[in-house]
Image (cartoon, rainbow, N blue to C red; front, side):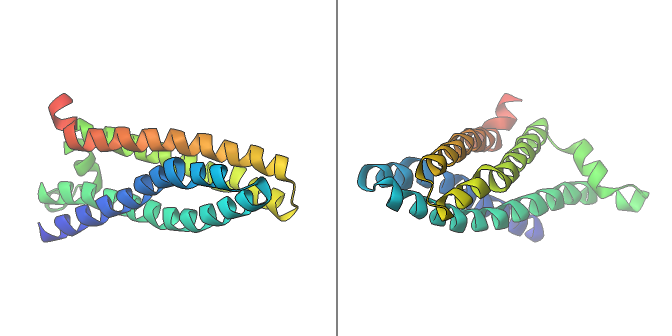
Length: 169
């Protein structure tokens, strides 16, 4: 049970970094940068801040996924799957509450959205900033903002499922 508690702590910590970071970027950093800085200052700042934040998100995604999968395995192992020659992961998936499956599905969707953000509009933002093409950089940053807002909503829904899901599902 101690290992499960450590896994859960790491899982929640990674989610806090990711979802909390999206909240801060979306509702504090970006609006402040828009209010105070012209595009030639704002866009490089946002690209640099997002680069640093996205490096933390990569770590958070890895930790969230690995700890989530490990907790599925733990559920199956606790049920004795391995003693019966069964897959602890498959048994954990079978025994997990529906709310956990909902969290897992939304989490995977969030990871795919992040991979797209990081691989397409953010990369294009970096290229536009390097070329000092401020209108193009602004369009790419707005696309990043929209997708981060979507992921933020999904993250909040996931937290709701995690905290009240057993009562609702």
